[in-house]
Image (cartoon, rainbow, N blue to C red; front, side, top):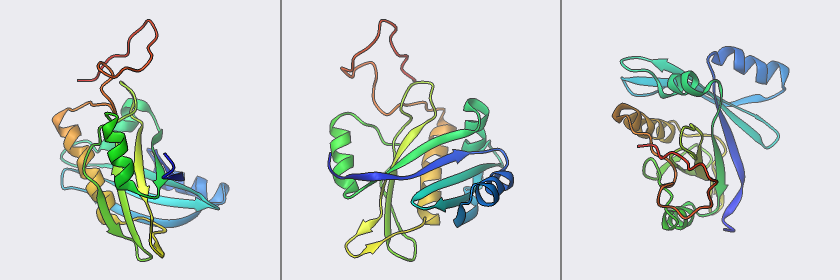
Amino acid sequence: MNQITGIDHITLCVENLEATEFLFTKILGFEVIWSARDIGTDKSSMDTVVVQRGNAKIALMQGRDKMMKSQISEFVEKYGQGVQHFAIEVDDIEAVCREWEAHGVKFSGSLKEGRDGFGPLKQRFTYPLFPGCGIFIELTQRQHGEEKAKTFVRSTVESLYKDIERDQAAGSERTIIDYESCPIPRETKPLKQAS
């Protein structure tokens, strides 16, 4: 798969966004490149700050519970503070999605498209990597001809949030592949399939 160009960003779910932003900007030397408050729906949402140092981008997210618990709050409660997903930057997101889907990969929603002021951005999330694990993969395409998105787009982030909130409200616990039917090597203890 030669369409992958590298890691675009890593996303951390945290309990105290203000303290985490201070850690990254005042102590670790990152700078804020994008932030947004109350991204989500009237049921739940999140606040996010994206920091960057050199080529390293890290998205920091804190949940806002409303009518239901935010997926970010739920992630922290279930798995602790830490990595929720990592984003792989690709040259042709549609081609990678087709390739992965041909191998049985399941995505949590459709392809999202937006524009950050510099150029167009395309994004798509998979379901979590393993049963009982909250970590998933995001595919990101920033380069489109001569233009390249550099930050993030509120509308796509909000749309991706809604996809996960929909599955959360439905109680869906799917994984990136169907571990029961996939011919992957197994140890003597089989992996449990989330239902």
